[in-house]
Image (cartoon, rainbow over all chains, first blue to last red; front, side, top):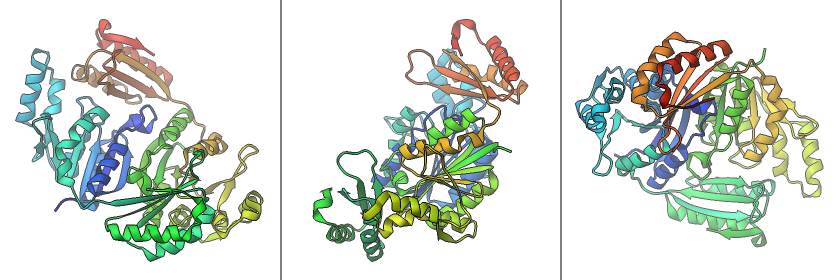
Length: 243
Length: 243
């Protein structure tokens, strides 16, 4: 069965120290949402093999799928492969398929450093496609992705369709009311539609509206009914638009 | 003693579902770095009071300071105050100072919804300044900040100087070498300078350089020595610049 929920583990001192703005999670969140998978937790940790191993194991047990981002290059600060191996009590071994790809790519420029990128947790599954020949490592339910956003985005399509689920249905109400006024009508509707996730997002400086209300769920009829119920609670002149 | 390390808890379905790109962590990471505090973990969770309470407690025990971002408005999906109270076994009570501020601000437009923003974990410390009168809630070592980036940034300066530590010293080497080639020289230098954090960050599409190396530590002499040692390992013609 395709995964119903997922977690992500972002690895990198450069993110925790503010040198680089994390760039993969909003992409992953949107992709998983579109696929119908609930991303339920994101954890950002340093390049510390013990910490990563512990988090990989915890997330792997708690969620259907785990995506790691970062730490898969050849240098000393790239410890994700070792950490994932340790999480599952596996050895790190050199994979002949990946070694072949690396040797073909680097040719006479090849160093032992380049070959480190052929080291994988024992028993890894390597997933690639015609379009994306460099494989993605999968260990148990953990998918290892690189931190560089261009490569993360290029590789994700190779595994995307494994995650296809029933889709979410989303309606949005844009209103000029503030949250203090919206609270009571929201409370009445939230209680009646437990299968619909209702969110309220104020915007400070938008000239068009003050609060965006979102209604989401896998049952379209329930979402539409909750939207109608909420609209019935609000003064029509304060509704900017409904999507 | 000022906190030496910190963690952050980001609360919001809207981030996990990709509706909104998280906007506070890169700011917080940079501020804490500049202050000399190590941000060691970021966790992103849904608007779920049980999940938030458990994470607040875990992070509060493991780190000197914890920053929460999000979930402090008046609507049903704002559950951070209740969760922080639950984490520490406290009740939620209405604070007279905050109630006074809210009544003064909303005047005749006041609703019970607005007043919910005066509800605080019992025993909270309220921190404000001349410039930022709306208080920041502090419970044990947990600092509650709003998710809206403009307000997060406006409120942070009120607590900033509580976190001032010995600063980090950062040097950077920009090079045209790739990571496979850099691995061996890096390994030699990393081993000699355990007090210096050394990072290697490839850039795919930058015309100026291929890899940025960063060397950081609280001991400036060690950082400078490690930088010199690493430069001595690299062919000068492959160094783009040093900062």
